Each structure stands twice: as structure tokens, then as C-alpha cells.
Image 1 (cartoon, rainbow, N blue to C red):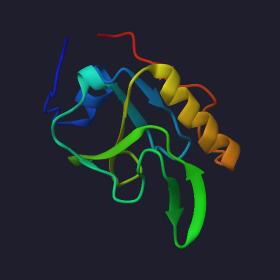
Image 2: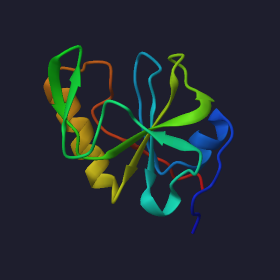
Image 3: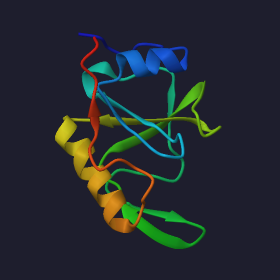
Image 4: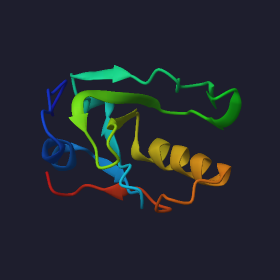
Length: 117
């Protein structure tokens, strides 16, 4: 079991994550089980588990997972890599369903489970 690993590049995230949410806009969400949580991440400043995500005074979707950003790794969309830390992969799928129901069209409808480990 891995725990609190300091993944240092985008290839590490793809290789060691438990699943991903794929986006047409290259805004990949890297999903890690709590037992595999990266150590060098910072809690997302706008998205908090159990709260409504609000951006520009507009209420968006409800957050059901812990959302973080990597401190140094930039993802394909030019922002810090988005990390979701979950209890189980069903929780990640539920969050994705909520985001899609809200109207996000850029994401694939199912999380992609990483079987490469």
C-alpha cells in the first residue's frame, strides 16, 4: 500500500492514480484513494467536501469528494493538476455524475479506472 507519496510529474499522477476523469479540454481529474493520497497537494480554495461550489457568486454543483490541487504539476489545461481524494471509486463516480448533471459536457460519463499498477 502506498501512502502520502510525493508524486513529482504528470506521468507519476497518471501511473499511480487509482482512476481519472477524462476531459475533452485536457482538464484531467486524478483520483486517489485515501490510502494512496499524494503528499504534495493543497486543498482546493473554492471546492470543499459537503459544500456547494460557488464561482463568481454563482452556485454550481455540490462537492462530495475532497478536492485538491498539486503544488507543482501542471495538467494539460495549464492549471495545477486537480486531485480528488476519495473513500472509494463509487464516490468519485458520484461526484462526476453531479458535475455532468449540472451541465458539464467536456467530461466522459464514467471514471477511467487505472489498472496499470
